[in-house]
Length: 350
Picture 1 (tube, one colour):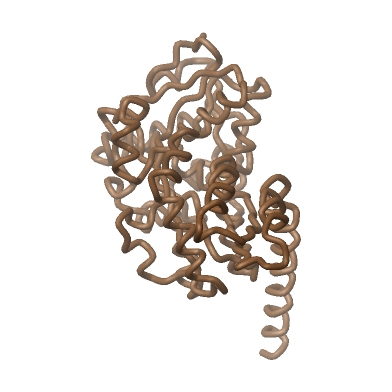
Picture 2: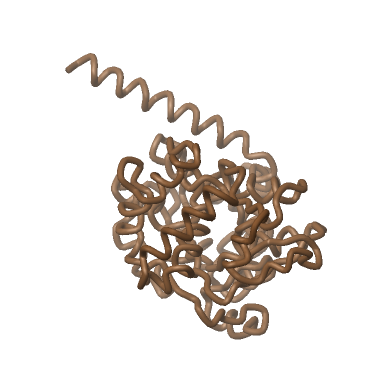
């Protein structure tokens, strides 16, 4: 028994070291925080560690300096880390410092709740614990030469679809549940939904990258006819000059991105002040500018023409909630999607 404990502790130590190394390799993420730290000097009020999934980096790179200009943010430095949502959650569990965590989906936040790293009432807020929303869209070549408009169009002969591996990417789970929900009429016809996923994955998805960001980059490099992605990712690509368009299908899923201050934060008051700023009119407009649906109702109203509600919009709760979805679809041993991926020869190892 002693040997087992020592082995387990050794594994935890290795994971913690790897997480800290990853945090130090955040590239532009770190730093932005490097700029903030330089402005604070030795008199910094606090240094906040923001650990987030990769796609909203462009937003936080704008919000952080704006917060620094407020009385609450004066002298605050930031150390930011961005990566795949699941990887980021595992890094925090392994020991990576975090004052604020922002993930792609609720189950990654719940992993931290289970470890006592985030309070179990994290979602009891005016925004239900969310920092932003989005929807799953079809990213297509400029002018939409293949005429992709609906989920049925993805199954046309010869159409190649790009979407990441759901066993390494939270974004991929949103993509596949959007497809399942659309084909199953919001979960009312499970057999039709699974039949659609089987045909999509085994016949039309040729490559499944590790992360949503890698998957979109694969498409932007010239592979595939259409990519499943977040609307905000498509907007970001367009703002960066990529020659693409995107289509919001009539039936799609609402993506919900959670955020929380950790229980172990060394500066919880400052961390909460930053979170409050990110949810303010000014902070939420930054999210809207990069294609995220604001959770601040006033900002959403001001941007209503930018984010029309799809007529067939549904949520993960309509499909049973994440606990049910993860068990029924993504359980490695018995999940229906896991079995389909195995048929397609795709790894389900996390």
